[in-house]
Length: 125
Image 1 (spheres, rainbow, N blue to C red):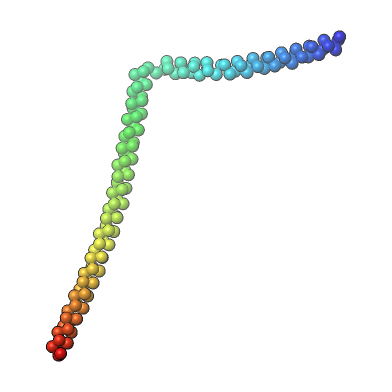
Image 2: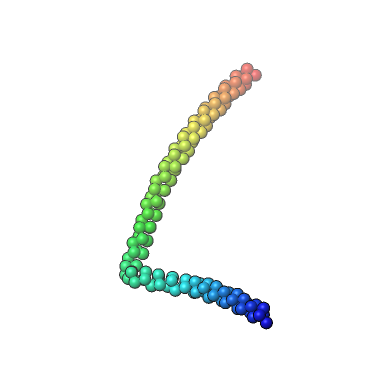
């Protein structure tokens, strides 16, 4: 019987340790929501609704001012790029107009030369 009593005591000690470990973990887990609630409660006491509202609107106003400033800078960059592109397009258009004018002069010259030769040929025939 002594061995059975020893086994019983060992089993009870193992179960007791398991219960203690489970209890400790449960206390740690259940304490978390209360800790967060306490922090929230103490934080809420520090700020009134009015001060929270003014902070919020102050932050949002600053944010939108920064976005508007960024938009102005981006607009400046875009204007520079558009200006450079327009300049290149204008230069290309001027060059194309010169090429077309030169080609038109050449065609006119060839047409007059052909007309003159045709008159000579018609006159000699």
